[in-house]
Length: 352
Image 1: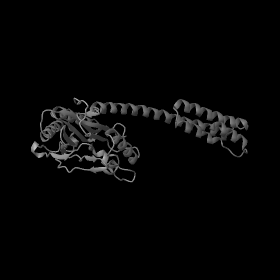
Image 2: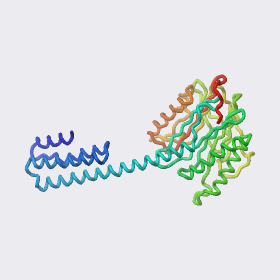
Image 3: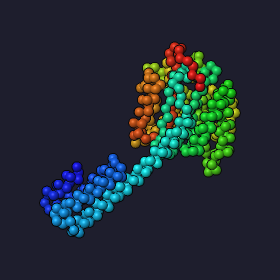
Image 4: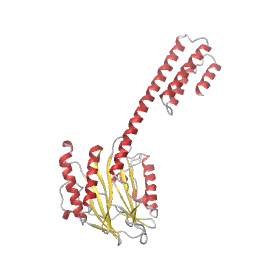
């Protein structure tokens, strides 16, 4: 349509007005929604239209018209070349993201909707930095009389972070059943991370790699939860009627910073009543910024949805967080919403 309109108008206007060069708009616009083949066809049509205009006025062989035809052909060729590079880049990026997504899916086993008497939902938001795979992690497992959950964040990105996250997840799933107390479990994870760093830590990052982690043990009976923090942010406790509190924890150093014994870790006991929801997360949530550099007001926003189910809660947070950041995160973010329903659940215990 543009080619036809510009050609017709150029023929109708006075001879001293030349609109033919505007034909380059057609292949430029085509490149925004089509591939190189269709863009090349439109480019050929623009060159043909410019030649037709010159032929109509009997000046096809003039230097001015020939230069316009050559310029249109050159610009159209550049646009087609751009389309080829863009499509190749898109294919490479799609492949990389597919591999990254598969790696994250294998690394972070999807949590079931119910773990024992607890209703659970999880969310992982990857930063949109092409192949940069973050080291955020979470896992849950059933133990005698309760549920143990871990959420953590490996410093750094890429394959090194993925390797350390995979090691920590495997160590947690095994050690969670061997150690009866959270401090002993934290010490076992510290030992695993220290061994991994001794074998695989790059020389230029010696002493700079660590993992923040939060360990939770939620008994099936009662109204409390036990927590041990290894340098990780405290969770939010959401109660009905838009009440949000952040429990005060006594964090130990992150895993991998220095060797620690069970006695160096503290168990914090937090009230977790029926109807409450625990919201655990990584720092990619609270450190997300908008265009003016303002941090995401996590507690304030979460207070709007305290009466929602875990799935709906994370849905609202995901949409609100991406809206705050303009659709792009600078760091990966992981969240788990853990809800203790009112009354005893009649659902069958999930054998995690």
